[in-house]
Image (cartoon, rainbow, N blue to C red; front, side, top):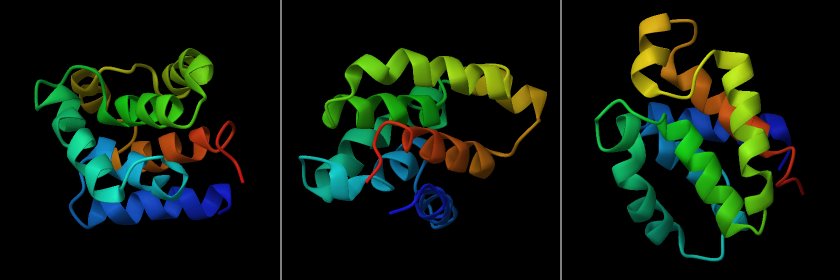
Length: 120
């Protein structure tokens, strides 16, 4: 899949009810060494800023999960820093307060950013 296809897949999954983390992770389900239903379950508590606490953004957690599961753990920090530079923070509550981008746009951005390391 192209970067654009992954981005749109993540945004579509988010619109369909996946939380931010699940949407990012499931956009890469075909690359993961675990079954999609298990990936959904693992990502579930990371939405809404870690179980609704508004802490680390679910998009960021999703990027970290995909990196770890696909052998790109060493790229995680760089992706997180790129996310922070583009969006101003990695904390869900602060991202929501800033209101620069809606969650669906952040989901798409994270999925696209992941494509720099998890490309076909």
